[in-house]
Length: 337
Ligand code: NAD
Ligand code: TYD
Image 1 (cartoon, rainbow, N blue to C red):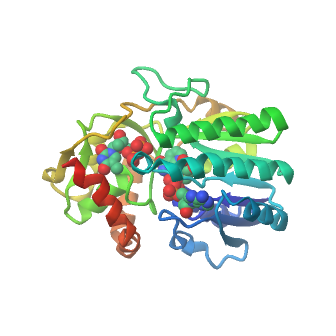
Image 2: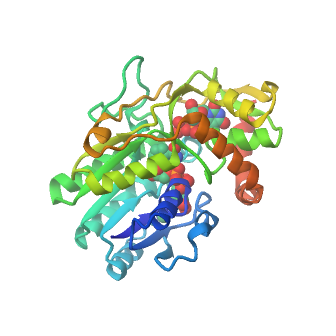
């Protein structure tokens, strides 16, 4: 199978590409990525010499570039990861988030329809369900109640993708995963930011009371779920992908400090995020029932591997933290006190 992977130089997309090539799951992988601040060719370095890999630097909002790629490459499937993926950035600066996540997805869907692409897997998030009251878990029919520009842009693009199945019979499947963590994650999200600060003995900024709940999914488990969906998922369906690991943020931070051998005095409570969703929770039952997939990596194991990776890859961290990172860090955290 020949795959076109948008956002394949980002955190999850690059894990998917590395796995696809290492495990010989694809005959050819074409990565289509704009290389925004979050895209990094170093993430593909372990498979860079594989002849089955081609990299195209282009924007999913650029209809001509998308069409040229589909014409030249004729992929069997598009696996669509490319997105502006960070809630805090979407609050400070929503325009690029709407442009890439909604209009970019539209551009891809249109081209996929015109070129008769046989499979379109749209990678989405459990954040589209918004905050969920205890003791409920969202299934795929739960109402969409997105709170941030990021989650609203993802909810909109999910609906748009599904409309292409209903209206044009494009073979679209949507996955909605919970919070991912693992190696190569840009240190703006909770886990890599806390690990990276802890390793540098810097304060760990916890929003509000730190009792917000997220479900944590190891990135390789997420990618295995996407392979399972590509293989066995039904057209026009949505599949939740969760890690069966629900934790308050403060517990996650404590575990990071403990595993990294750093003191709890590094924890710092800062002003909360506007519109902060209190609790995400989802059920995997549909995906497990239909494909047999289930998460394999427990949180302690995944966290230990992730911390070890950040310890051993200080150069990667230094590269991604140079330049733009510090500007955003100051913008997001200085005003929080
Ligand atoms: P990321 O920010 O690490 O990577 C995004 C990638 O997309 C980067 O390589 C970037 O260069 C590329 N990109 C951004 N805008 C683009 C554009 N206009 N054209 C082409 N490429 C562009 O993101 P991630 O964490 O790997 O997330 C990947 C996908 O998974 C996203 O769709 C996200 O919504 C979804 N998701 C993420 C999580 C999570 O916890 N990170 C959880 C569930 C779902
Ligand atoms: P994040 O990794 O940004 O993912 P999302 O908002 O998409 O779930 O944040 C995860 C949780 O951690 C969320 O409740 C916000 C919180 N958080 C902090 O407390 N401090 C931080 O510096 C960051 C980045 C997040």
